[in-house]
Image (cartoon, helix red, strand yellow):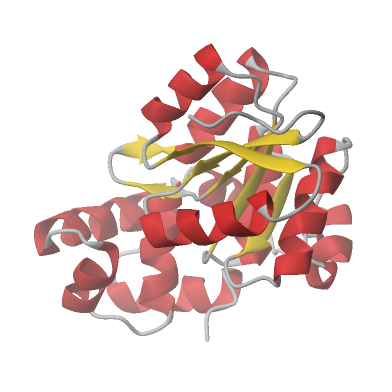
Length: 220
């Protein structure tokens, strides 16, 4: 835990990847009126930050082995309403941004966003704003009106962040072995996840999963 600069917005970083957290810490600590007070790799470790420090903004990923980050965001946003949650993820924004906002998060940006976008995002959510990219803002305002049925949207709402990540990789043409390597999972875990996806999305084949990913997650 770090000591916040006097008068600065306090930020906690939550992501499995240490290198990314180090880069974000350098960026935010090098910015006037921002201070990183904690940097952790697991959701349960974030609770220590809440218990010890005032945290104005949590900048976090979505994928954690064994943890449902969307469920955590819902719990944290209710138990710590003074804290804002800005998600950085590589998952398809068109689907996940709405999921994050519905869960109680305050913003969603893609990993790889510019430093200025990240800094601006922190200030905006801290001020009570909602942060998403301009490319999907209009679509979120109309609540994905182009989706074919409400039932289909509800099916996607059942998916965890881990399942969305697997489905995204399926849509990009990744085989089970490549998915396992990319996500640091066992091949059995990937197979189990795919079977769960088929059940939740009412399909019977990997090809149908790919088609859904292409249609609904914008995979290319």
